[in-house]
Length: 404
Image (cartoon, rainbow, N blue to C red; front, side, top):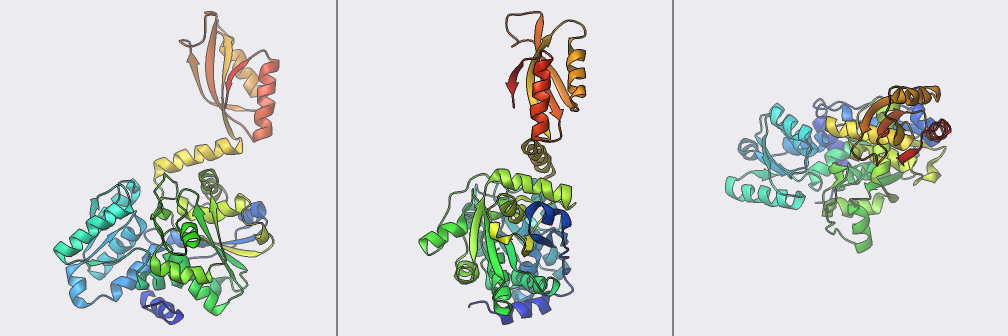
């Protein structure tokens, strides 16, 4: 049964009180660096850190009494599972989730803490789904699809209604695309009420589910590749979601992992909010220049989730600093006699840089036993500062053996 605006409005009434109306503030710093007038729809502020709660609660509330008692199951990389676990606990409905082995640890442990039964099965979503289907057959659970069930799509569409209320003069909404449930519901709500508003989807270049479906004219399977945007790695767009979204979405672009990484850093540094890779893709699209026509426009970025593994976040931040030219590493050749390292350190300090880490490499420093290689990781201001630092070191007689 196709989803309608009436279904989305009903979902909004149904889930009211069970979720927050997430904020959608103007971001001055993001507006300055993108050239658009940016607001961020912060659904990472939901209890489980994701928009997925909208559809999960809507679907759970529509189950029959018998189905509620028996329990539900889903295959999910994390956020759908978290939404089901949390609202299942609130509503007294048992929840089992099957996660593929690439699911972030933070999502696994949080889901367990919320009371769900978590099974780690399969190398991708398809294998996790097969395990879930087997349990439906053997245990009688109700399967709730994470992005293609009509109740899920309607629930996600409530975000579109909120955006139109919070930013009535919006020109464009930029939204992540994985399985398609969010953009399908959001676009239906927005286009039904304000057809002039552009709805733009953003994929990771490592996923590309929606673009592949557009080329083929129907959903197709896309091989999984490693990506920071693990929430978009669904292998295929949903059939129901695609049927809705293809008529409503104005444009779909893809962004590379480097830009996703940088967007995560910008959100932490400028917007003071932690986002996962999928949620960073809308900002990544603007930063990478994929959406030049949005300059000067009132744009809402859908920030759909904040469940990123802290260890990955740390690596992403450091990689972003390298990309910014605020962290650099080089190997210099210095005298291995007393005072040799001190001279190098003074030269680095004189250039206005700060040493973060330094290590001697004597084993691979060549035949000159009076010299040693030192590997230096240094904090700098930007790329011109890196260039100036390296020139200064060469002027001081420190040949750089390896530059990174």
